[in-house]
Image (cartoon, rainbow, N blue to C red; front, side, top):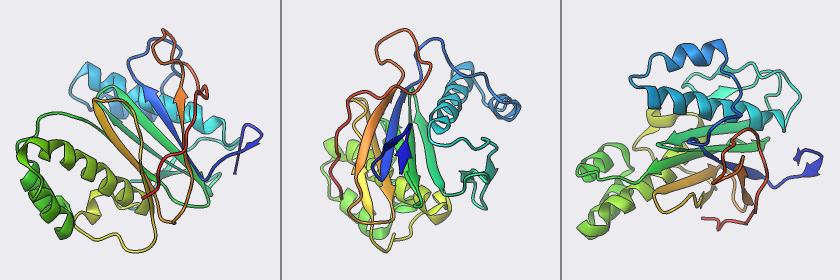
Length: 226
């Protein structure tokens, strides 16, 4: 797979800081319509910026028209370049965009926050073995462990294209599932249904600066594979 003329690893993940000012692509009419359904201005802004980043990033991987279609369970794809696989997740002030070619990919990021009902949620949405393992975690560490496990499971479900429609099911087959480091206030994971794949991270725009704007490759590193 090639990106901007260079061969890229099997999966690339872009980390997007949504509170950066300026330089965002204008929204499409469909994005504007969907954002208007959200209940607060911060949620609308984060939605629009995460989707602007998605379009800016995908432009560097394909010359195809970015006219999105939606699969049966809601996962977007590009009919004009169906072999380019991608996935978007955003939580609070961070978004992640995962990109691969010829293999599906899923990504999930969660802002760490108090979650007293984490055991009940795990019993509802986790595979039985994952829920049982979480119940064995000491209470002081349980919420953080819940989010770590949630992002792994959700990334796998999104790679399958089923999202929470598949909640509670075991994910059979060979997988690469890797954590993505986006800072101490978040946990995140990326998943692809193939073993031994390489994952690299990039920074979108300039972290800590005043401009967001476009995909700028920062330091990259290999992530451990599950």
